[in-house]
Every structure is written in C-alpha cells, then in structure tokens.
Length: 233
Image (cartoon, rainbow, N blue to C red; front, side, top):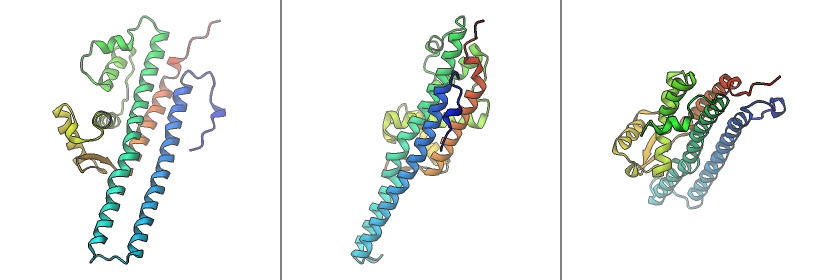
C-alpha cells in the first residue's frame, strides 16, 4: 500500500504511531507476496518431480511426494510466515495503546500513571488492564466495538501461545489457556491444529490484520488531540 507521507502533519503527536501502522500494513502485503511465491515454487517442484519420475496415484512415491508437499504448504510455511507476524501485529496494538496512555498522562500529571495502575491489577492481562485504565483514569472507552474487542482478546491468546510455547499445544501453560486455545482452533474458521501445533490460514491472518490496523487508525484519530501539547501564547 502506497502512503503519501508528505501529506502528514509533522507536528502530529501520534505521527510515529500512524507510520508504524502503515509500515505493518506494508510488511503484511510483502509477506503475502513472499508466501505465495514460495508456495508456487513448491508446487512447481512437486509437478516437476511427478512428471519426471512418471508417478501416478498407484505409486507409493506419488503419495509420499504429495504428503511432503502438503506438510510444507499447510504446516511449515504458515508457521514460518504467519505466526511471527501475528505476534508483531499484537505487539503493535499494545505499544500504541501504551503510547497514547503515556502521552495523555504526561500532559495531565495529576492522573495516575499506567505502570502504577498496572501493578495493582495482579495477574490481569494487558488488554483488560488497559481497558480499565482508559475507563477509570482517562475516561476513554478503549475499543467500543464489542466484536472487535473479542477478536483482540482472541489474538492475544494466540499470541501468547506462539510467543511462549512456539505454537505447540502441549507446551501451553496454564492448563485453562491450553483448553481455550484448542477450543478456539476448533471454533474459528481458518485456524487449525496440525502435528500438535496451531496453524493459521491466510484468511484468518488477513481478516485479523485488517481489523487490528483499522481499529488502531480509529483509535489514533480519536485520541490525537488529547495527546497534543497545549500551545503556550
């Protein structure tokens, strides 16, 4: 996606955050192109092998070649390309939510700092702590769209599974998270389990990327002025 950065307001207090959103969008589009290119390469290699060796469905080697191709295309490549990207996507959301909270609090030093608020919330996750902080301290509703909020929670759980267990289901802790992730993989279209790992299809990654980036742009737009230092006369 081409973005005309020259049209941006250089005094925008959230200019860097906005650029990060567009950078991740560009990265995702590049990732998609690379994934398709690698998949085409593997398909070409498979077709060449089957043709050169004159293999048919009656040959055990044909089934071995198809199985190896499916393993790469349906498991190895999605893990290699999609899983790390989802971790980065969620990290972008966290960082911008924290950046905006910090910017507003800095301009209003009587307000409680996010980190101080966080320490008193025990083992709550970042999303829940952030929502409470924005509501109770900043008087802002973080992500008012219920469906979007629920998908952000889903992404956060998948992110935890990838970052802390490399997507391996048996390594997930605590046990209730393991149960949740397995159920989500069963319920969510284009998410699956394969060889004991969570796998993500391109439609899920595309929809999640669009949802997160759109929500961040909305969030930035609505809170830009609250982050802007007051001009002194």
